[in-house]
Amino acid sequence: MNLRLALPFACLVSMTACSDRNESTQTTSNDNTSNSYASAVNTVAAPKEPTLSQLVTPNDVCKLFATLSMPTPQGWVDDTSGSDTSFGCIGDPIFIGDQAEGASNPNSVESAAVGSAVDVKGIMVAMWIRNRDESDQAVKVFLNKSTAVLKSTVKVNHLPKKIVQAIQDNSNISAEIHGINIQVKYEEWTSGRGYTTYFIIGQDPNN
Image 1 (spheres, rainbow, N blue to C red):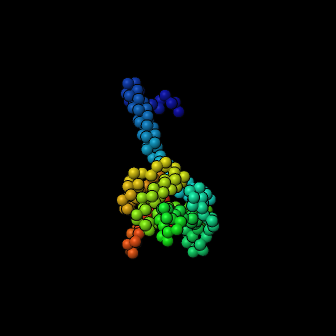
Image 2: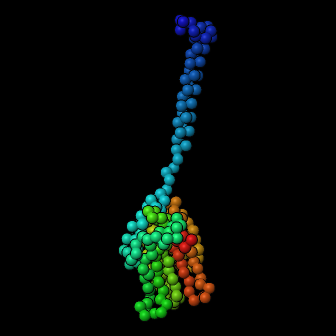
């Protein structure tokens, strides 16, 4: 077939009409290309935030507690409960106060982490206030240890102001930092003799 003769009749009659048709076709093609590109750009998924288990290993947590004067003598062990958080480690408590060594009920800061055999799912720093008169010193230690744990795991240098405020006000709060859940939980003892404040990263080890 002679390709020249295959042009539409309108083009044979008017080269202007043919030119307009070609230009219109080219413009439409370019528009489609632009729309396809824009659509592709808009559908690119944002990178996912890392999970706690991707940021820290069981060995990392045990070593971290040791550097914070809360060593874990048994290391990362299985409590044989068979749950998905049956593994974990518990750091030795730090006793706080002028009479901490000889007091029968000194204030303390403690630590724990839970997870599977290879993953960390939750990390906790807990403050036990048994002597309210010496609670200020315990709060300072608690804030210091909580900040150090957050910095070493989630890579944030400071506790958010609302987290600090919740700890100082004996209130509860939940927030997200880099996609990881952070909690402060306050529990007044039913005896009225004291309270416990928990700073939790990830899953609550108490659950």
